[in-house]
Structure formats: C-alpha cells, structure tokens
Length: 327
Image 1 (cartoon, rainbow, N blue to C red):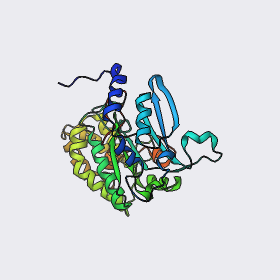
Image 2 (cartoon, rainbow, N blue to C red):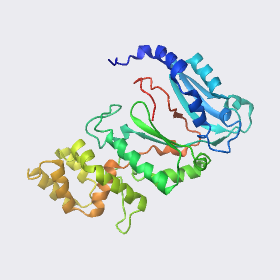
Image 3 (tube, one colour):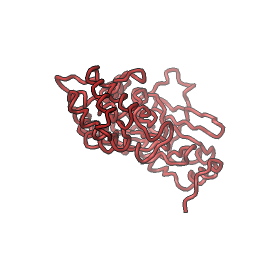
Image 4 (cartoon, rainbow, N blue to C red):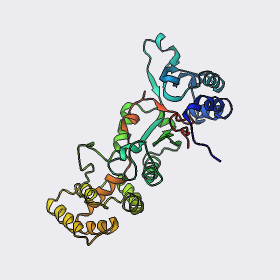
C-alpha cells in the first residue's frame, strides 16, 4: 500500500535516493549533450549546477568533472533542489578567478506552469492540479512538440514533469545549445501567441487575411481536444460569469450583447450548446482566437530567452510534493 508523502522524511528519503537510485551515469551523458559529437572534453566540468540545501541554503557555481564527483557531493550535501545553468568558458567553481566569466551555451528550454492557466481553468487554482486541468499540459506538449520538430528541425527533446504544477522541455541539439540570447528570443517569440498579460481580456489577435502556418497547425490540434478540454472538462460557458469571460474576446458589442441575452434565456443550457450557437454568431477568426486563448501553450518565455537562466534539473525530487521531476 502506498504511503502518503511526509516532508519530515525528506532528508532520509533523499539520502536513499542519492545513494541508490539517482541515474548518475545516464544523467551526465545527457548533460554532456546526449552523446552528440564533437564534445569539448571539459564540457561537463564547465556546466553550472546549483544546490538548495535544507533551511534554504543556496549554493551556486558548483561544477563536477564526472558522474562520481557529482554523486560524492550529492550524497554528502543531500540537496533538496538541484538546478542546472549554462556551460561557461571556465569551470563555474573558478568564476571568481576569471575576469571575463561568460556563459557559452545551454539547452534551449521551455517552462509551462499550470498557474498561468488560472484565468481559464475552473477545476483548480494555484499549485493544485488534477487530471482534468492537466489536459492543458497534454495539448501544450502536442503543439510545441510539432512546432519544435517540424518548424525548427530539433530532434533531441526531453519533456519532464516539474514535480509539482508544470512541465519543462530541454532541447539538446547542438544548434539549440549554441543559440545566443537573440536566437533564443526569436524562437520564444515565434511560439508566443498570447500577449497582453492579465490586464487584457483579449490576448490573441489573428489577421483575417492569413494565419501563420504554425498557428494553423496549433488550431487543428486544439480543435481535436477543445470539446473534452474546455467545454466538458472546464465548462467554460457553464455560468453567466464564465460566458462573459469568453464573450469579452469578441470585439463586436452588439453580437456580444445578443449572445449574453440568448444564453440567459435558458434555450442553450450546456457549454457545448452555447459554443455551437456562438460559432454561428461570430466570425471564424473570432472562434479561432477564443480556442487559442483558452488552450494554446502559456510559455514563460523569459526562461527560454535567458542563456544563464537556472532551471530545476530532471531527476530532481520536488521537496513539497516528494515527486520526481521526470519524463
């Protein structure tokens, strides 16, 4: 019988995990570029690691030459969290000795957090997640996986659960690892569809004369999942308040007022019935904008843009949930 996670046991459990279960050799092979050649012989030792120890003691600019060195230090210190940074032009542990200490490369990474869906999900909020709202992450992976493979040609992608409320994608292709901040920003902006932040009711603006092919592919994926995800799972038109949130995306005041009146009449009771009626009343572009706003991946693009941005490592245990950051 499975036992409930008790955070007071974290140190004891981590000690066992780091001694017996952590896949050091496989992990360091991945750190070294997934076995792609050629690789700098000093590549691993120039990679920055950071440990967060008990009582939030934070150690940056750690570096290790091989899997055994990493294991020795992890077993000794029992980090509660492990983060990975960039590969530098020198060992991070020597950063105070180097006048021009600079990041050279790192995997291209993407971070999607379920809390960024709080304005469109109705089943949970904050750090809470369930099988219903997790479908947002499933759709996000499908959309991004297609774009990264087909639009950019990337092959070496590792998708991992963050251990609590989101997912991370690590792209290890040499071309991805060697992108500078400008290139990383370009990829992030290419994949960013929602804009405007919390202050804007409408976050997607499509041009009627033509939709970018990548966005069109995303719409096709969303269409296949929209009924189950948004109409049944989240019931986005199930109440008058939720209806107003959806209808706020339409710029046509008269149509919006008419739909509010129709929904209030009781003729259309379910989200699916209301959605079908809405599609008859607004433009095709508006329908697509609504679907994108509710189901398109919500990226933390600052994580992608930053070459020196630290991100929680795969195979790290999340201290608050006791769960793996895993594939």
